[in-house]
Length: 242
Image (tube, rainbow, N blue to C red; front, side, top):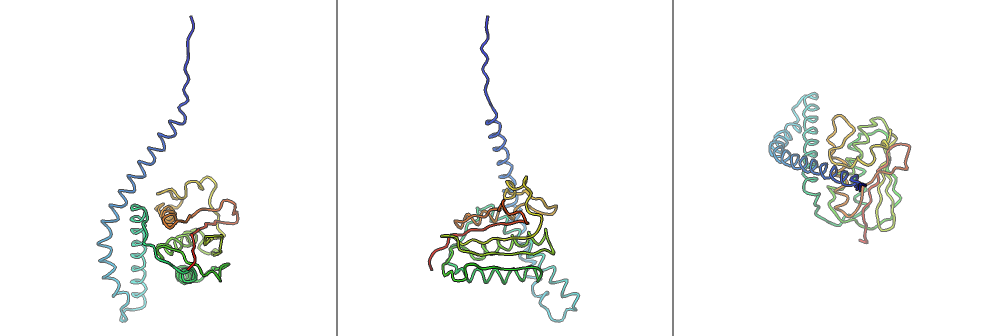
């Protein structure tokens, strides 16, 4: 006369299935991006080799020289994008070398000044007497730092950028702070997700590649949710005695 009803909560199972489907889509996108990057790399290298001497030629008119320089810079930007795709696809493998912290910060300051060409920019070093070293690939580290600066300048072209370098225990901490709109609360958990972007022309690879490279160096890249006057990204790297 009675019935036995068995109720099974499948919420967690459905959530895991959705995550698995999402990761499969990301894997397919990554493989496609890597294959495309390999195809682009060869003709791009040939174009860079051919355009370099033209851009440096002295007999060009000023307008022609500026045009050639802009074309060369656009190709270098495309080259960086290709490298980002390949770095993400291969897990951001690095060739570790000891890098003096003061040399790393000096290079960062020089390259950032060249990137933003003046404007509101300041570097504050709270570790001027730090004689330690970080181990990793200097080119890769500077590349992800410049990516953070470039992101801020695209969002706030006339704003200010402050980079604070400090010693935090066994780590070197670099905080990249701008006075822009900051990271929206609903985007904070997704900004490091591959191919997620809030900009119309963005690829969604910059921050994911930067975080992968930071982790490959034994460090971390994160957004500070407590900073409300703009965006604040903190890069931490393990540091050792020279």
